[in-house]
Image (cartoon, rainbow, N blue to C red; front, side):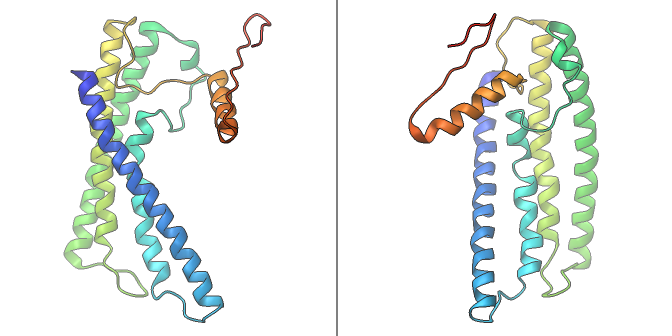
Length: 205
């Protein structure tokens, strides 16, 4: 059941990540049009700065749950990297519970900020764009993140009880060798090549 829930929710997180990527591409196009319009035609996009301020909230927050699922957020693994088994999963549980508490607080106050901006009709300075849509993005993104953290918590509790089971619903800790291998594969992907470097006991293939 955990695997099915994680798989289905990851598809939703992936969709949000694609939306974030499309927004970033749209900002790049808008920036190009802004520069050409200002320099060549002396007609910049009206309210460009205000629009960028609002749009940035989409890609800044919408993909945080997707990144959490892949273990892409910055983690302090100086001690955790030396642990294994139930000891590792116990501290992962503690860290996940702490993260849930922080996200609940941020989601709550993010919602209150959105509600206040919506009620008073807060807007940007230059072109009076409403601010509440961008502020609503914060509690929505944190709500998705909260669901991901609960799935992660269940996954770590399961691993704490059964340390030899397959990793399901939890981010994977990548070693330095794993990261180096991923960079090598990504760098050579365009040439249709794949290099596999294994350095154990002085052997290299």
